[in-house]
Structures are given as structure tokens and as C-alpha cells.
Length: 180
Image (tube, rainbow, N blue to C red; front, side):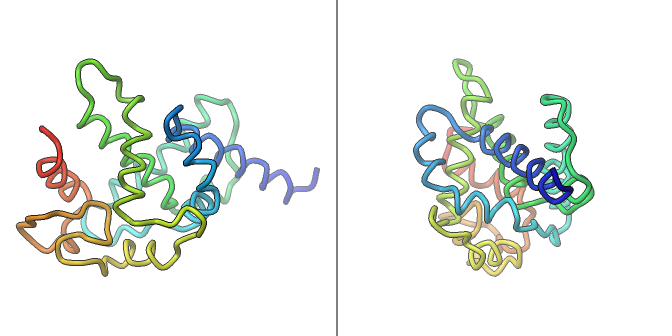
């Protein structure tokens, strides 16, 4: 096996593992139909230029350590040292989202797939495309004042969502849309 093939194999195993975190029996077909989108998310970096959004990037990169611990597989140096991908950030954010919406009769793990797909739907990502334009809108924060075009659109924003860190956008979205 060549070095390039080994790197591609390591990338692929990690990609499949990440996808496995956001799939359940209800979302399996949707994930299968969204491979182009998921690959676009995997190879597109997340840019954390709003203060404290580096926490979202750090949590996304933290999935790499979890992958190594859970699978015993090492990541290649490019992934291990690289910037957080959009997919990593979204999976980690879906986990945080799931913690907030889990009820007493559900587990957080059960809520991760539906929370991930809420984020995908809010971004209006096309499952058959890499969606680079829509991801650029998220990265550059060029979505609407109320968050439309971003992760957490609000009906009644109290401030310009383009300048609000993602964590607080999520909290406002949860207050508007869930019994939190």
C-alpha cells in the first residue's frame, strides 16, 4: 500500500466513523443519499472568527481523540494537525444540542442524529452537492440578521446573529423552538 493510499484509507475510516455518529434507523436512508454533502462537509474547514467559536472548533477536533480511543486507529498527520472540518464542528455541535434537548426517557446518543439533521436543514444543504457556497455563508457569517442561512435561524432575534457566537445562537434557538 502506498503512503497516499494509506492516508486516504485513514481519512475514509474516520469519515465513516463520523457519519456513524449521526445515523440511526430513521436517518440511515438520508445519510446514504447525502454522501456528496457529507464529503463536502468533511473536506471544508470551519472558520472560527467570532470570539469563542474556537470552542466549537476545539470540540470538533476533540472528536479525533475520541476516534483514536474508541477505534484504536491513528489519524494521518494531515487530519491530526489540521483545522477543524465543518463536519467535525457540526457533529460536535449536534452532540451539545442533543444534551440540551434530551428528555428523561431518551439518551443523548439517540438525539444526536436528529439534532445533526436539524442543523443540516437549517443550513438548507442540498444532499447531492458539496454546498461550498452555503458553507462559505456560514464561515463568513454573511447570513441574515436573524440567522437565516446559518445554523440557528430565529423568529425574534434580540441582536444580529452574525456577530453572536454559535453557542449563544444555539441557546436562543432552543428557547424559541424547544421547551427548555
